[in-house]
Amino acid sequence: MATTNNTKTIDDLKGTINKQNNQIADLLTNMSNLRDEVFLLKKELGRFKNDVANDVKYLTNRVDS
Image (cartoon, rainbow, N blue to C red; front, side, top):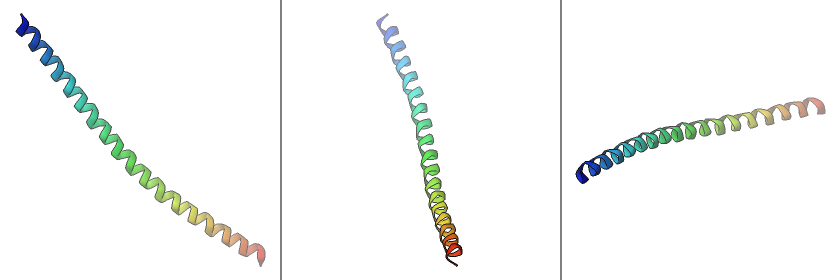
């Protein structure tokens, strides 16, 4: 009987470990995707700032002319 209980407990623990491994893999994938998105957002924000600065410079020159 004790062996049956131990086997069931071990099988339950193995199932829990497999589930957690899958969850960890999913989380790592999500983190990687988020890292990529943050990189792209930073790049787009830099481009946006540059475009706004150019627009302000253009408008300032037009007003001064």
